[in-house]
Amino acid sequence: METIFDILKTKPNEEINLMSPLVWAYIGDAVYELCIRTYLVDTTKLNPHKLHIESIKYVKASAQAHILENIMQDLTIEEQTIVKRSRNVQNHHIPKNANITQYMYATAFEGLIGYLYLTNQNERLNRIIEKCINFGKELTND
Image 1 (cartoon, one colour):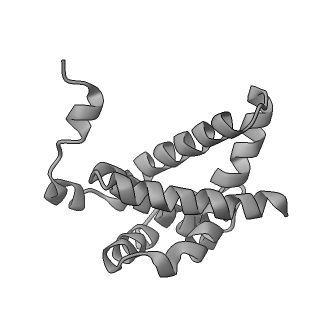
Image 2 (cartoon, rainbow, N blue to C red; image 1 turned 90 degrees about the horizontal axis):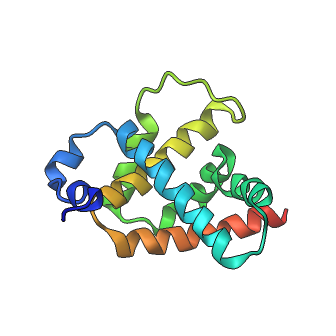
């Protein structure tokens, strides 16, 4: 039986490239949060409330913007292009807990994560998530 993951992963890259970067960011937000939650569940013994508090330190817009700034030099030209497309997309959402620049870079970060996920670049996605976790650890220790 075909699962939802099989269906989602069969879109051709040409179709994914035509999607709005906001769609990439939408799915990237979910993928990144799931990775962070999984990491925290696997590496801590926190209760659900404390897991939530800890995960926010990694997934809030200011943290994502900072992480992107720190991994940008390690991205390929294609990935940097994805980041620029995602950062420059017109978004009419007004952020609550971040300034507009942080929000734009957080959207760019989520766009990159979503794009890598949708295009089945799982090994690369895993490497970037690992870097994010390491930078996130530094942020949570401040």
